Image 1 (cartoon, rainbow, N blue to C red):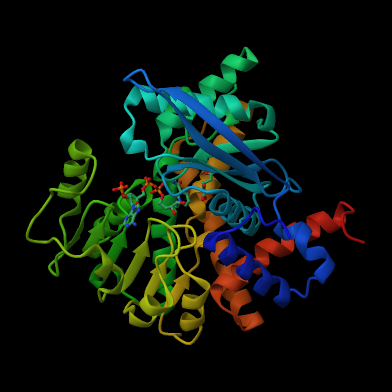
Image 2 (cartoon, rainbow, N blue to C red):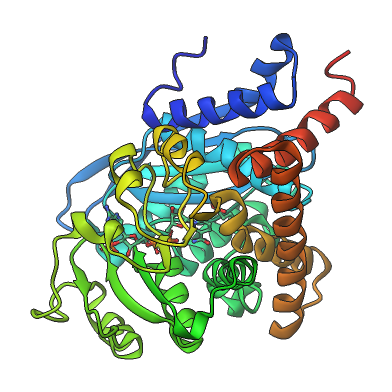
Length: 419
Ligand SMILES: NC(=O)C1=CN([C@@H]2O[C@H](COP(=O)(O)OP(=O)(O)OC[C@H]3O[C@@H](n4cnc5c(N)ncnc54)[C@H](OP(=O)(O)O)[C@@H]3O)[C@@H](O)[C@H]2O)C=CC1
Ligand SMILES: O=C(O)CCC(=O)C(=O)O
């Protein structure tokens, strides 16, 4: 059924869903409606390149469900985007929003493009065209986009401006993750990484790990990974290794994160920062450390890598970094405390929710209020997850997925979808 949602990433999200549905004993005839997206929109985005040629990019927006409110989720610009990946990410958004009790269904979008291959002008044209194509299908009470891999505050500002030009008035609440200068909230840019760090702190309390004497390895040094690195560094954690798609560095004495952040600010990528600390990026996830943070892409922790990982806390900042086969290995490794993705990186969408609320009310909060409210919501999700994992005798991932799925199921049931 629904063969259009193919590929390994959707398959993985489907398997996780089925495991959770089994735990919750959801009847078979109710599963397809919970699993398959409400709608998937495919668009073609033609732009004029600077050299005068025309090129057409494929784009997607998948809205998984609208049972709890508008759908919500980021848009990624990446050469690896396909419909199956975007659909899988929309499912994870649904469980994430419901786990955190946010009034949203899940959605995700993507354009199959290498954003580094575009000039600033071309990137603006592509961003505007993608939003233009989606105007009939989105809205502040229908579907609200946000940043993800390869997109940022500037892209969100172009999305908002394009939608607003069509509406004939400024509609800040159409996207989140915008610059503060045009309706963004204080603290959204840092929110995902900040939330990851907060839950690493909570996990360290659970396993009695002294953070100021611990070490970390971080894969991915973008919006999320760089903030986690900087926050952990400030807490006294020794950052042993980092990577992006251009380079990976390892220094057993600890990397100088403030210096690397300055390098990134001028060079954009890690390549060229150091020659002595360079390592093979394929080895980064198996470096012995206390805290391992995958903050890049899906499916990087395979069964083989899971067997070799030597960490105490696995903080899944990325969406879907751990395959189902790797999870089976971790189920037999209680030595590793896993903070599953839908919980670990939920600070981003939580603060996006705050941005949407502020835009709807045109009443803006101080950053301190944003952070306090975010950590309160994340703490609730964290403690609910670990106590329900114990109660259900399952993993933290299954406990978190079950909590999200249960809320979506209950909403659909109450609204009359299921008898
Ligand atoms: N932004 C947000 O608010 C949220 C993001 N997430 C998730 O966090 C993850 C990171 O997103 P974000 O930081 O926003 O994205 P960015 O585009 O800002 O950064 C992605 C980072 O990952 C690196 N990367 C990409 N592929 C690889 C690879 N194969 N090996 C090593 N590094 C790689 C990129 O390197 P390079 O720059 O060289 O391409 C970049 O450093 C994603 O899984 C995303 O879905 C989850 C919740 C919210
Ligand atoms: O901020 C948002 O709305 C969504 C962020 C996102 O894409 C994610 O949590 O994976």
